Length: 439
Image 1 (tube, one colour):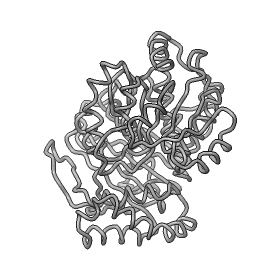
Image 2 (cartoon, rainbow, N blue to C red):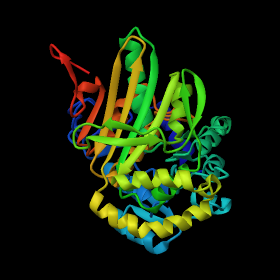
Image 3 (cartoon, rainbow, N blue to C red):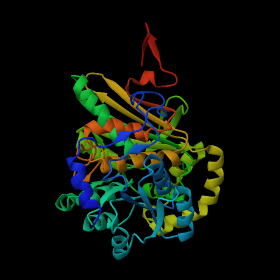
Image 4 (cartoon, one colour):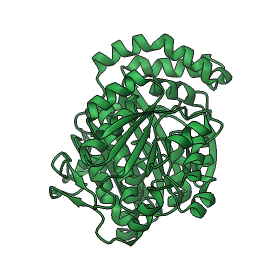
């Protein structure tokens, strides 16, 4: 392939990978990330015109990623991959002259390999990933020696992707799975909390908890709705003191404080891939993930579906799509009222009593997910990812020295972004024990 192999050889050799045209003005611990990083990234000459194919580029997540990339790196050539030419033409019109539409069927290997010809990097945002039997896009990327990022949010799919690690190494192809907002940015937040704890504390990281909140569907469309329904058909895998445990989906409700602009929200257990990957990669013995939405009756409805509908039905992609088609008009109406705020809170507890938190909140999930995914794309184009298939928290996936910049890019537009702080400093109503001591 003309583009990718030469790009990788160059990426490995260069020292200065990328110049941000406006200086970073604050660290990831700042409460507002809008001013942290300039609006454009200038890639070196040899990679400035890289061709990036965004599969699912006519959808909410893929389209948001394409827009974010075109704004950050206007010289990148963006290929909008999808099946609908009319939607593709509309997205190309939005992106401008340095883009084009590529008609692709991700279930057809020949169609994929033809689309990947002369492409330097492919972004797989054509979900849902739940109950997918093969990693066809990743296989095609390895066959054509094309760098790869996906926004997978399914445990089984991510593990299947990881099984291609040796093939990616042999092909000299860098690949990241689960490289979206959550999982993705949340994994990197967790990795940074653990790294800081191990360097600054005598205690050992003991408990890692992921909490997510999205208003409605976050404006992310029917694919997110399908993903949510499919996850209700999966047993939740969590880890308690090193032992794997299985729990009922959308159970174990907790009220969590997501800080300013979000407040306290109910969240429920879901089976998400970052639980297993961070447990294994970061070595934290107790890990779980919870998610909640609003208005409150959506949470009640999700819990009711889990209790009343057979798991086999919720794992059937075609039947779930029928439910999505039925509910989608109502969901869209509610979304127009609920908005699309998104918040992630990652909590780490250590054996010496050290407890630290990271929070990431944005007014629009449909924008934030694109910024997040684009940050992983740039990390690969800048040479921060080694050949192989990696989770975001693995140092081969995103080098430690590249994490801060990735988080800054992902956090563009957030109204609350803090890292490595005690919970009382970020919560809306911290409890005072007395003498100015908060918990």
